[in-house]
Image (cartoon, rainbow, N blue to C red):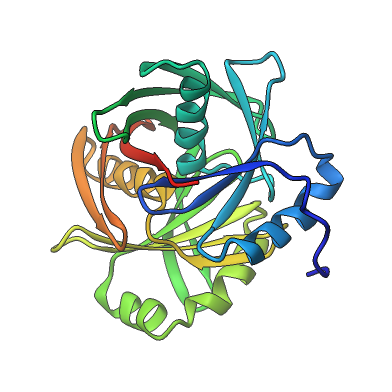
Length: 263
């Protein structure tokens, strides 16, 4: 990573979407500088796990580009809440243009009396398949445009990869093998509905045991729906709280989340 760059002129907001702390840059920044600025901002704001850049590009109501070019569900719901806040509206459906994917995500958001945005985000998976990684055979992968998630629920594998932190080394290698901008490993304890997310973003070289992962939660829900060939409505207990997802075997899901601006 490069040394710190000047961020004194950068205007930004910090959101808490499901405790996955997200920094959104309001200042216009050239794409070539976004990675270095994001690294410096994350050094300054120690709790931040990801950085996104806000645009008004004429597509959708508002546009978002993450510093690593990845898709981020929590940042998407945060920028939808930001858009409504700027318009002094307390409810609405916001079309968020995900710039690197060139897709539009619909986010429904409503501000409650405690200043928390309750959101519903509709997402679609490209495909679900199984792949061998090293000595780990037929691990399920759920693909989105610019992030993919490996779902691991076997107790022996959770102990081997999650509890030992071995996954921190393997996730970088596996991200290169499937050629994705970002990769998550979702450790899923079905008995307790517990989900532990590890997320690596290749271009910006960030690696976090996240307090929640929106797209990873959706991926896990879609994986369950795909396996049982039926629609599911599940809640997942993550380090930062609870996330709920409705998913069906066709690859469509609705994620229910919360966003609060903290700075």
